[in-house]
Image (cartoon, rainbow, N blue to C red):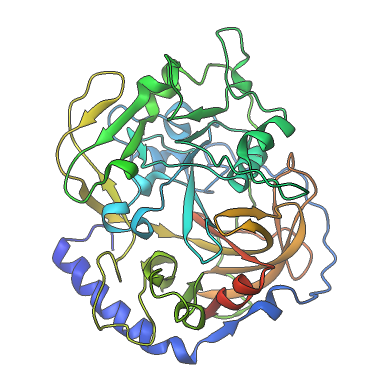
Length: 440
């Protein structure tokens, strides 16, 4: 499935969703007790990984192969041979499909999905390393959890706004306070070292140099709150600075398919299951729930959004039951907050070699104020090569990378390719009841 026409995509979509949703009831369910079970895994602390010359540390793919996918004007490690991760906040609009599809999202190497609201609305963030395409986004505001993820990558982070709510006591969700506590520079001057130029807010005022990389997309399906994209090569050349030293975030990779584990050809990721959905009919589940379908010929998972599982084909809602694709747009713009004219165009599906579910306690001082606990340790489940594997994750401090371990206590080896990390939260009564993973 290298490239699909609109007709083939539509047919594949209907057939996949019908079969996948029909199988949901019989799939193995991982509920809250499973999230917190004691797996009795003694981990063998991992050091820094290395890859052979010419291999990406983030995807495990040959950089020459990645470079062959690039277009004129693109940058990134595949073109420059320099490790250069950049983190980009996604708006979460329409569940990241259809009109909400990530711009040039098929060039992102890693995706994270975190809950934005107690009731289950999620947002994504993306890591671009191998290829830096022209436009990335669309971006909206950040939360403290994304700031903590950025800290383990040590890379520039692009977003548009930040949560301002602070709460008395331990679980302070004010992003500015998290930035201050981590001693991250929130701005910079010409004398600021490159590695300290890390946070770039698209809602900042004045003449900040990164604001010249903002673009607004106009076209069918786009809304003003969710149409801010970034000219990433412009930032590489004019803003991020040369000579930057990045943290080593290299994963382990294995060319062979996993031999152990049970079958996992379909993986359902439920941030709002039906029991919770019945309590709040104004918050449709299509924003939150997805499934991944394994394609063995390509050794990848395709991601789809799903609607109410009790009535999957009745009263369809826009953007429901769509495969996650790459979005592109065309238009000539000047520097500054220019406008990209022309409709958003559907690109190829975005596929994933690895789907990781990181079970994480979350504190919710208020319904729209997540405080995920992203240090310490917890359970993790892995879906790769059509198999399901169990393990744990561990991260000692915000400065450390999150290491994912298998049942043998060794750092787990991923399949070469793109990775999708679901940060599945629990801890409050509503989230404990609502969150669920199923697979078969």
